[in-house]
Image (cartoon, rainbow, N blue to C red; front, side, top):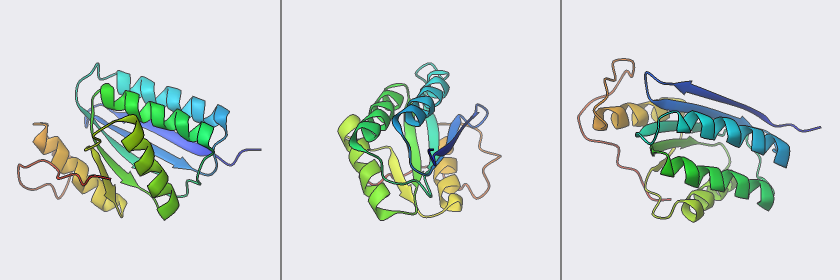
Length: 152
């Protein structure tokens, strides 16, 4: 029995996908997650949108399962993901996700690794300002410059 748990929430008012992944993913669970993720991303019809990827508790995946996620990351970037705040509690998972983003979306400059949900929300609030979106719902947003993503 799999230990994978995930949620995909699409907040269209914030133009943000909230992803949560934890546990160990088998191929079937990853395919289900990827389908939901890409459907939500496609709903923006190529317009810029954001992702908060909370992967605290995610365990490293097999190469086949990781490839499914990597392909989805690449496709979502093509569908308009312009900033992804990535939160993980495992250095190994962080390295695996960084590699996947790099391999499946060349020149990946949209991933920002964060250390807390508070920091992730601040990064996304700054991205909303940069995108010209009203970010009243994003407390702590200041300035008008966009996020300064670090390369993985």
